Length: 291
Length: 291
Image 1 (cartoon, rainbow over the protein chains, first blue to last red):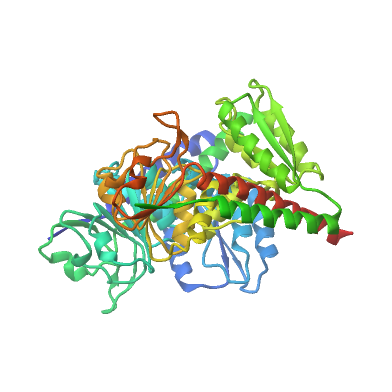
Image 2: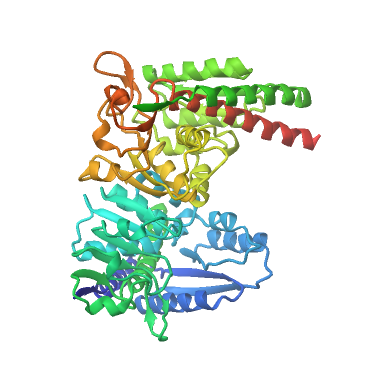
C-alpha cells in the first residue's frame, strides 16, 4: 500500500499565512499587492496555469493583471513591456508565461525582469544565487514545492539518497542544487541514462519530473521510498495522472507517494502567491522606510 | 596497474594553438592580448597559482598585469578598480584571485567584471549560461580541464555513470551541469554522504575534488573506472599529491587515473590562456568591424 501525500494542507497554510500578511501589510503600507502576468501568443496550457494562479491570487487579495502580446511580438516588444512593469510602482511581481514563441530570446526577456519582482526565479541573479547558495528567496516555484512537501511530511533530506528523474531548468537542475545544499546525495537521471531502474531503486527520495505519464511503477522503487510525482496531464483513461502509474497506489510495496492531482501542483501555486507577497512586502517596506 | 593520464600533451596543444591565434590576430588587429590579475591582500597559494598563469601567458605572448590591493581594501575599492579595467580597451581579460578577504562581497565583485572579460566564468551571465545550457564560452577553467582530459583520452561521457566527489562552485557544481548536458548520469557526493564507497564504486568516471589528500584508494573504485584527480597539495611525505593515494598507482586493480602533478592542473592553466585569447579575439574583432 502507498501512503498518499497531499499538498492541500501545506497549500492552505501558505495561502492563509499570505492572506494574513497582506492584511497586516495593507494596514501598514496602505497598498495591495499586484502581479503582472505576461503572455505572448495564446498557449492553452499556459492559460490554464495562469487561471489557477489568478484564482489563488484573488482568494488572498492579490490583484492579478494580464498583459497579452500577439504571437508575432518581437523580443524588443516583450522587453519594452517588462521595463514598464519594472518601473511601475503599483506592480510588485512579474510572471512571464512559458513556453514563449521560438523567435523570442527568452534569456533576454527573463533578465529584463527586475530581480526583486522575479516571482518565478528566472533572472540571472536568482539563478546565480541558487547555484552559489542552493537557495534564493525567489526560486523556481515547482522545485520549492517539492522541498515544502518533503519538509511538511518530515522526510529527512540530509544524508538521503535522492534521485531526480528529469533535467529541466525548473525542476531537475534547481532541485539538484537545493537538495545537495541540504546535504542530500543527488543523482540526476534522464532519457539517456542506462539501467534507470538500478539507480531509481537506490533512492530514499525519488522525484519524477519527466512528463512521461504513468511510466513509473513499483519496479522503479525500493520498499519504504518516498516518491514525489511532479508530472501532470491527461492519462490513458482521460484521468488526470502523473508520472507514476496509479494502479500501483494499491500494490503491496510500501512507499509514500505524492498524489496527482492534489500533490505538488497545489503547493506550487501557493508558493507563487507567497513569492508575490514577499516581493510586495520588500518593495513596500523600502518605500515606507524612505518616507 | 593504473594507466596514468597526463595533461601535458593537451596543455601543449592548447598553448601552441593559442600562440598561433595570437600571431594571426596580431597581424590582423595590431594588438596584443593583455590580462589583468587582481589580488586583494597577500594569499600565498593564490600568488603561486598567479605565477603559473603569468608564466603560461608569457610563453604564448599574453601580457599579464598584476593589480594588488591592500588586504583592508573595501568591496567598493575592488569594484572601482574592476570598472576601470572593464572600460580599458587595452585590457582583454580580468581574473580576480580567490579567496578574497571575508569582508569583501565576492558576488558583487565578480559581477562587476564585464562578462566578455570574465576569464574564470564567475559573472552571473556565465553562471546562468552554464545552468541553462551546460556550457558557456568562458566557464570555470578547472571543470573545463576535467572535460578536456576525458575527451582527449576518448573516455565516453554520454551514457556514463559519473560520480563527482565535492560540491564546489568551481568543480562539483559546474561539472554536474556540464556532464549532465553531455548525457552522463551524474551523482554528487560530499562530506555528508553516507556509504560513499558504495556510490563511488558504481562510477565509470570518478572525479575527486575534495582536497582530502591521499584519502581515496582502490577500495573506492571499480575495475576499469577512469579517475580524474583534481586535488593537489603537499602529502604526508612532503611530495605533491592529489586526493588519490599514489601507493595504489601500482596495485593490481586496473583503472585509468590522471596524474598529480601533471594532470588536471596543467590543463587548467592552459584553458585560462585559451579564454584570454578568446576574449581578446572577440573584443578585437568587434573593434575591427566597427572601423
